[in-house]
Amino acid sequence: MTDLIASLRDEARTAPESGIVDVITFGRDCADLIPLWVGEGDLPTPEFITRAAAASLARGETFYTHQRGIPALRQALADYHLRHFGKDWGAERYFVTGSGMQAIQIAVRLVAGSGDEVIYPSPAWPNLPAALQIAGAEAVSVPLVFAAQGWTLDADRVIAAITPRTRAIYLNSPSNPTGWIADRATLETILHEARRRGLWIIADEVYSRFVRGGLTRAPSFIDIAEPDDRILYVNTFSKNWAMTGWRVGWLSAPPEIGQVVENLIQYSTSGVAEFMQHAAHAALTQGEAFLAEETARADLGLEILTTALGDTQRARFTRPGGAFYLFFGIEGEDDSRDLARRIVRETGVGLAPGIAFGAEGEGFLRLCFARSRRDLSTAAARLRDWIAR
Ligand SMILES: Cc1ncc(COP(=O)(O)O)c(C=O)c1O
Image 1 (tube, rainbow, N blue to C red):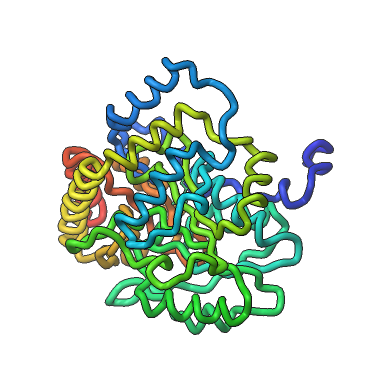
Image 2: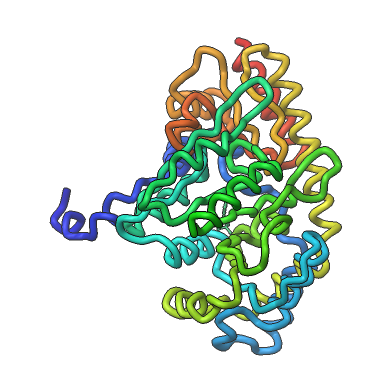
């Protein structure tokens, strides 16, 4: 280790490299690559959104702006939640952030620091435990368990993991990478216990609109909570409206802590660019048809893949209820990092190794199916032939 690296703060120096990026770096130059390893679709941001951004820039809106978010966007967020979650909680509780990831960073900074513990179900998106580690807090995993009926979380195990050092429970539903969806009873158990013990909940519901079976959204803490419960909801424009490259999200928090949230925004990004906020406003107010098209496309993609993988008789998976990932294993293959490398080298299909999502994800691969029918059909055929070879 060089002196320069050794002299850095421990928590920063030891932050892990992403296990997803590792396989991307390995395979990005493979011939005829179909990249299904990252968490985004292949559609560019729709024009009604980019037009709103361009119009804002043309109006010269290039100055510092409201740190909590422009009033019109905060109101649009309140309206969106009223429309889809049936709760009129007012615009004051919404804070526009520079991505869902920044909303997580702020949520973590609000409630957990050195010596604190935060409980989370795993496999999980690795950025959460990494954000905790950088903050000096400890990420305590509770396993999501894979069985014939799919992934399940035993809420009693979450409760059993609570110690005097626990400050918060992070729950990502629908889950990346498993597609697991928390049912209302699970949410109730966790909320009940969090209230009883004065713990915070970080509710990561970024995939709540990506659900199957005729539903329009997943169960949410919003269904059962009061507006002043200790819940920080993190969300993003990235997934619903094909805006991963924009880096804009939101945090929903009790208005009582508004000034503290604003201070943390001030001392990180000092607010999101105004033209991006106008784009986000267009997404919320005009984006339902696009979202419906995206979810229908993802359903078709999932169908293509599960049919092909089912044919092999060697793939282990259940149909994910939410998000746009298939988390699957292959009989006899236990080392997901090695497996992802072999598959990309030999088939050109880029998959994320399950180990990147924690020890509980080992033996699985994550595949993002938010892509064109053509790409997914080709990828499905290549995977089927490779697995059955
Ligand atoms: C579970 C989960 N939460 C939050 C995010 C953050 O999304 P973004 O930073 O693109 O807004 C992601 C992105 O992959 C995610 O999978």
